[in-house]
Length: 278
Image (cartoon, rainbow, N blue to C red; front, side):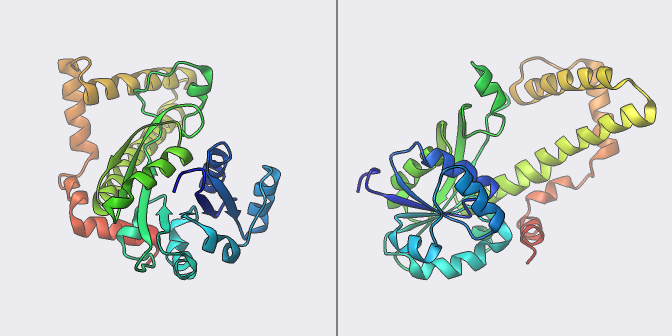
């Protein structure tokens, strides 16, 4: 079946991710149906010029069902909708936590897939104002996607959909559901996003506790974040000897000795349980 014949149904079309993927589907070769139940979400969908269809009507027509609902309700929603799906339908979630935790409804004939956007890389060579403005991805700035599918035969179909909803896409990287869960949340939320919030807190202390003028603090922090990332992750330049000493002091002072335990299976289960409020 060609992409022109396939129908994609977006569940939660009025939410943040639902609105993003729906906008891209509107310019794709796919037929799309948009489902939303909240009043505010319905208003956002209709304001964007898209009609709202009831899930019980749309899902039986779908070749791919995209669950763009919050992680905490994915299990409940999937149990309501999977029985309505035709054989061969792809159930596509946008985050791996619920799939890893085994909360999603399964049924013979329904292909389960997960695909999460990487967001435009900090090292992306942007070439336009539109790409610079697109920090999240899915509009102008190219990004990679990491995906998993439970049937290898469905990989090409899923990749085509992923490229449509997250475009422009550079590469789609295929991993297992567990590996995707290690990437998100452990690598990028537990570590990278936490470090981002730590930087924000440190900036606040520098300005409001120490009394450094905020423009000066922002200027030196923003520039040094870039050089820290290029030096540490790409090896662009070596840190100075004095900087290496300060780095070691920072690790001793801020980071726990046993921090790498976050990569243990038990810790992954712990954070996923907490995220999904199980």
